[in-house]
Amino acid sequence: MKRVIVILTVIGMFATANWALEGEKVFAQKCAVCHKHYYIPQSKLERNYRNYNMDLNLNAPTLTELSFRLKDQVGDRTLDAEGQKFEIEEYLTKFLQNPSAFPTILPKKVKELFGTMPPVPVTEEEVEALADFMYDYAEKMMIEHGVKRYSYEEALKKAKKENKIIMIEGYLPYCRGCIWMDRNVMVEPKVKEALNKDFLLVKKNLLTEKLPLGIKRLGTPSFYFIDSDGKTILEMVEGTGTVEEFLSLLKSVKKAKKR
Ligand code: HEC
Image 1 (tube, protein in one colour):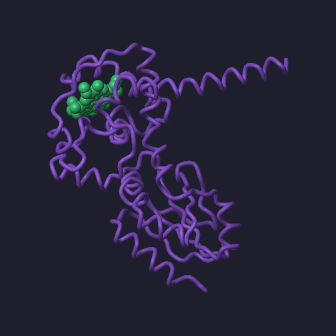
Image 2: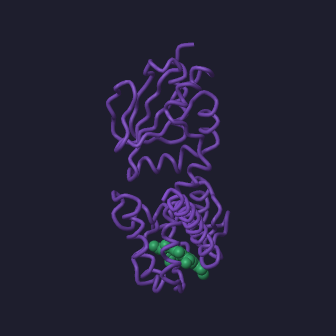
Image 3: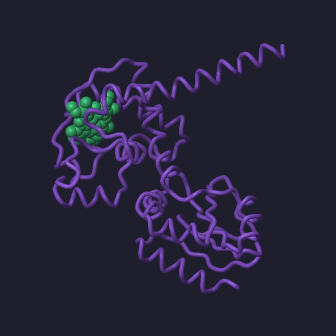
């Protein structure tokens, strides 16, 4: 019996790995001629759109943009991942047959630059793989291009050793402000530099996780700064801010830190 379970687990692992690969492959074959699948920071994209697409000369919105917009605009974004992926799959099935029949999920200024997409034939299996791949893509890019994330336990140890401040970012999976911060602020080089130098980032999903030291949660996104002793709360704030505002917050927290 034990052996059967091991074999099934191994098959399961291969199946999952293939699945992810499959979606990436389908996208590369059928979508990537128009939709760039490498990461372009949001600040660069916005500059490009302000310049009527003359900086980057894109054929279509990027895969990262589509991934964010699908999650934000299609189906119920408060559902769990599997539930919403299913809704995105249903949407893509119909959309790819006749794109012009659907109201756009893109911001108006983006849609206006690109006109309308032609129909792209795909099989049922391909759509399922695409929905899976596209749903996960944006978050994957945020992890790859943002600052390193630690568990609270890891951060505690490292903070003591390196005399750094722990910054907990409290979020909800469907909170628009949280996604906005990840996309527009936390990936910017100046912010990454400041965070990497003096802070350790811990992300906590406030729907499922508790904050340490009995801290009562604020709204989302919220940022809780704890000194390297693991005991002193230096600052707690909620809401979004620009790169400059966030940098000045980090600066003031650093000033409040005990030496
Ligand atoms: C020939 C170029 C081309 C190909 C191939 C292509 N797209 Fe697009 N796509 C576009 C353009 C241009 C837009 C923006 C205009 C629009 O929304 O229709 C777009 C927009 C979209 C949108 C947002 C639509 C909206 O306005 O709400 C989605 C979702 C999308 N594409 C998915 C896909 C997927 C998935 C594939 C591959 C199966 C794919 N596209 C293949 C050109 C293309």
